[in-house]
Image (cartoon, rainbow, N blue to C red; front, side, top):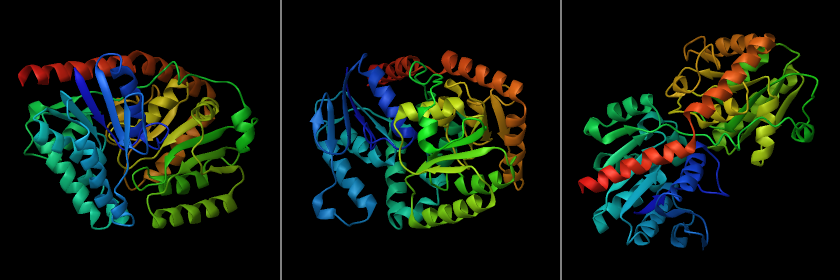
Length: 383
């Protein structure tokens, strides 16, 4: 079976959960099918073909530049038996390949444009184009993969023209051999964390979706002896970047031990920071699943997260962490939950151990890849 996998992010250019998903899914799929990966960037190697936007569109709206990459991907997909696209950045390429070559198209939905209206800040009028591309590809796809049960419900609500039978749940995965407790401390020393004091850790992009402003306000009032680690970068817009910097300055003036790491850290350093955190926090306002919660759990760390989207399918409330309702009391709820977990080290240790066990037992990438291949086989058998 010859499969073309289409994505914006691929190593070494991975900055979000969708990129992590594709990286590990591709590794496992490559053992099961004849796989070519098509992604953004320059150059080709090891069944990975990178495509850049057309130079004639330099300076144009990002949506138009994205479409030019999609056209280049489509042209390179001839000879594939099936194409599988991830995120709106690649969906149009998969849809056009379906039409041009008469092959099935599978879409994995990591998020949905109708549920991310703040993207209009980033894309301007391009948001209408990204929304059109996603809708067109999803409604015509032979199969749509939802990364959680909650995501499946969102897809069917946003795109009611889509037949329910074409939407399949295949959860995100985690490499628990890679993501495992690392008790070294050199990464902590490099970022300036005091090893004698507990810390709350956030890892994610500076976006509305990730709820970073909520977090910065919530941690103002946690136990003053607790440090705050923010591995936060890649702001979506100048506006959210400015808001983050203002809130960070206010937080730093109000309490000690606030550490902002704005650059993308190497994965081994992130694993070490996750391992030593007293609690990992995920304050997302929208999250189809949240791979980063799985990463924290695999490192044996309890999680405090918002009760949205697919997060409750990962974080077992009261067992591997604490879920906080996204309501008018959300920020105060985050404060209370963080203090409760940090303040009860025995319970936190039990949650961390249970989280590691859950990640190992239920979310391995090899199982995700096998389920994905069975989906391909079912589609090709029907074709």
